[in-house]
Image 1 (cartoon, rainbow, N blue to C red):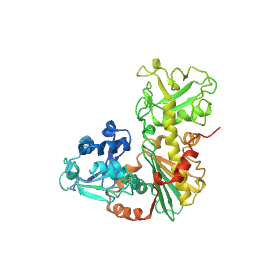
Image 2: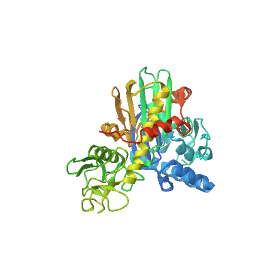
Image 3: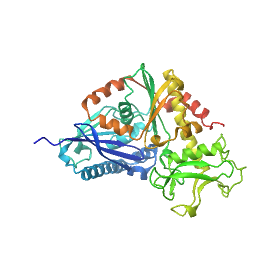
Image 4: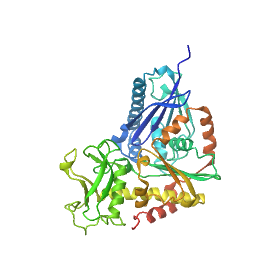
Length: 422
């Protein structure tokens, strides 16, 4: 009788979401997958808030560490139970995430990430028994692995995306863009890899905006506005009454607001236009997407001027990071032949909307492939020893740019803060 197949677990700890995959090791197929909210969001929607909370009191770090470990263990239990796989058949767990999520999972101090020169406490690959990091559901022989941290806010998730991209052995100029609360961007060339992380904030993942919702059932995910009546039409995930606006819906709304002159290139809603869809009754202007009598909650769904300002800063940070990486690597947008665009948010973006708001330069020669789970796919590939060995070579070839220390990044940020005119 043949031996039963062994399995590995791949985990991507995002600031907002956690993805867990169960992978059959003999053929490397994904057997099951779950996506869940990172429970740490109650202590801050972004990594800076969580770092500050963690460093106020040692007990606060314990709260965040215990919380993320318990969530991952429960998620893994659920995946195994649903798949009817016994825990002795899991030999390895591969964990990736940005540096802060990595440090909180492995209970590493965060103080050095809060002040210049923004250094990670531990940059080396980690391989230890799973029960030593709170995954005591597993037997002692189950190993938990995480690839190296690049530096400061470029964590193992960026390394995983590079492994997943299949761009590393090619001569053309390619990019990976993992859009999320932090957006990791890399340019892969025959002469090396340039990489940076832009603090793009939680708004793109459905957090922090007034009517924000994750990319889930009931979220408005695409918006078009009539240029004569200013009335919106939209699509909703699950084809139900809307409950809120997800990140892709917010980008789509901004693009259409710009097209109809309801939104001015400097980033302000146009108060000169009179329409019932533009509410000017309070100090904060709002564009109404759906009135309360048509929503699931009975409340208006809107995008407010304050939301638009926050999103404006996020898109300028991403664009500024791309422009700086292009300049430092010696290439332009026209030289890029292929892009892997990933992340829960990035995979669903409409590229024409991204170009319209100026978040990306126009990559007119590039094939853009959108993949939802680039980081967790890379984590799955890192269950293989040959890919773990390859990571060390990748790290040695990386040219890391710390954006917070770059005056030129601030110049690009300000240049691309306004939206493109028609």
